[in-house]
Length: 486
Ligand code: F6P
Image 1 (spheres, protein in one colour):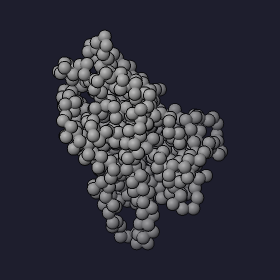
Image 2: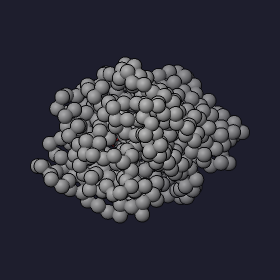
Image 3: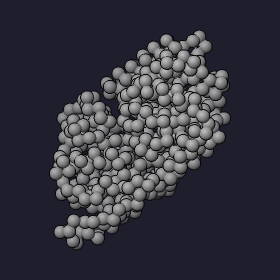
Image 4: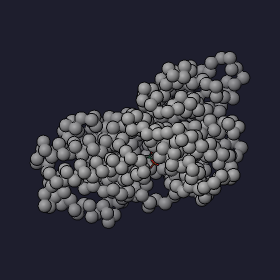
């Protein structure tokens, strides 16, 4: 299959650049090896009607990277308007933060249609399309409009919420009907898949059998593909990065003090304010931990043009300064707070330096930081992962210390417990998590999805002549021991 991968944000093959998007960083090594064409936004816009969309194309491993200038008139409505002020809040169960307009929706649809037209130039015989994430929910339907009959898959990197929440999105019905133009829809967790299926059954009143939905587009298979990382490679990078100047400086500055680390985009889904309240509480409840443990919180600014993000940035900065003011000493700063990104290899070294990794989102599709923190640990003296039970990663990393990110006291107690956990328990928990990471690599995720996409075509060829019979499909291979049909 000649694979075309589509996502809004893409990454160039330069390992030393800071990566802001989990999706782009995760996809880069696998797309590079696959020979696929990866198409996405250049981050630039272009005025006027473009007959042939402008794309800057460069080699990427065995394939290519095509970066498109998106239409200037629609970019704001598409990216900040509909994708990140209607879909993102709803997908993370924050429909109270939806701020959008009819114009934003029309721009979102325009950019989806624009992307479909742009993709036609990369189409070859035996092409398969793999669309990533919530920016392009309608892209499958737009491609079908243009006469594409080849397999089109979609993977959602975020959670999929309950129907009551997604119904807060204007035009939800139209969009979800359009999603059924995809042959395969992949989710991070079984819960996301079940929520989507419930909408399709209850709101669209469509029939579904063994994870296959029948609609006017034909059949759409729903399945679960938890995204992973290349744990071995990350572990090697972490061991090497320990001598990186930034990492060495951090170690020296600690003077034997222990460190907890949080690394997030500055986003309201990440639970940053609750986390800072939890550290505040911990230093209040356990005064002996003052001066002996500090938090390094890296929070990369994101989507700055959206009011909710600006408000969050101010709130977190105020809170950090308040906590530092109350607990700090002339020679001790409780929270080191940085608003910048680091490249993956420096991050690997920072994770390895920290005795506790705090990953406490209120909702998260997967959260690859949790997996990276685990992979970066020294096997002889591993740190402890404190993980929100509402991160997709919690379904796999169940030997982390799981917390409710809304329970500040509970988090404070758990972080303190992590700091005093004996070595044998740390090792047992870490080894169980590493085994999961080794079994579910990003390479495996990529291969599983592409195999399943190819299977949809085989299934179609097999069952189309006997349309009267509802199809009975064989179950897909299981991923990490969990069934992939729901
Ligand atoms: O999970 C959704 C996602 O696409 C992640 O890959 C990434 O963390 C984020 O959203 C990217 O956001 P943006 O491209 O808006 O910076």
